[in-house]
Image (cartoon, rainbow, N blue to C red; front, side, top):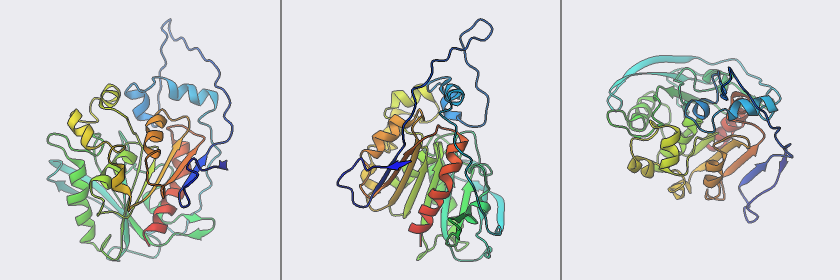
Amino acid sequence: MTENSTRPDNASGEVVLATDVSRRRLLKWIAGGVGTVIVIGATGFELVQHGVLPGKQLLDRIDGACSLPATPLSFAAIGPSETGRFYSEARHRSVGYTISYPPAHRAGDSLALIVMLHGYSNNHTTALFGMSPAQALALRIDGAPLPPMAMVSVDGGNGYWNPHPGDDPMAMVVHELIPFCQRKGLGVAPHQIGLMGISMGGYGALAIAERFPNLVSAVAAISPAVWTSYPQAHAANGGAFASKLTFDAGNVIAYVDSLKDISVRVASGINDPFQPGVESLTNVLPRSATVVFSAGCHSEPFFVEQEPPSIAFLAHHLK
């Protein structure tokens, strides 16, 4: 992988571009006389389930565009985790959560906090891929442990972390989850708060940071599910936004200036169908932002590859 800044005047930002990508072979699939492709799997959830370039994820996998070397992971001793439920007034339901602590720490310790937002069809137990939150905090990056910090994940439903009638996962995160964690000593000044998410969660992390820029210090979005218009979003997933007004209010491209005082890292695979939206976003991000475009799709191998550097990025900016 080579590095090449697409912003020549950017002294502090980082843009990583992929190396040569071979032209995709033309593949034809015919099942039972009908030209359809059936995709089964836990990843690529937004893409095929909601009609974003139907079948593309399978074609990418067959053609090798989604193939990535296994990401080597090294962990220190795993710290403790607390799992429970609380009633969310904002979501009008009980939601599950997990708070994980770094090695050699425990509940009651004062620490910086990462709020990890899950993707579509996931929940607080499956917000990360290839590792648990406690393992994520125990990662060794280039052989070195991460600075100590806590991580919380919570059930946000499938509403793209934005307000819907009778269900507001954004308000739940901001006005319920984070204060709940702060009462436990997490994310309380001088310690800071970071947002992280994958896919739908990546969009949510950016949207919450833009709406509440004084709340967080850093954001890391992996494969964020970014659409450039309400018709595009509604055609792909009619439940993502309650209305055009809701989409406009949560348009992370339109309100990117709100991130100017926040450390931002965005990573996306060059064969991810959300890539056009991500490129539109990164073209207007502050020049200090870190942008990573590399080989991969909207799938677990890319997510796992980008989790360690994203967590390390947050750790560096939450000191």
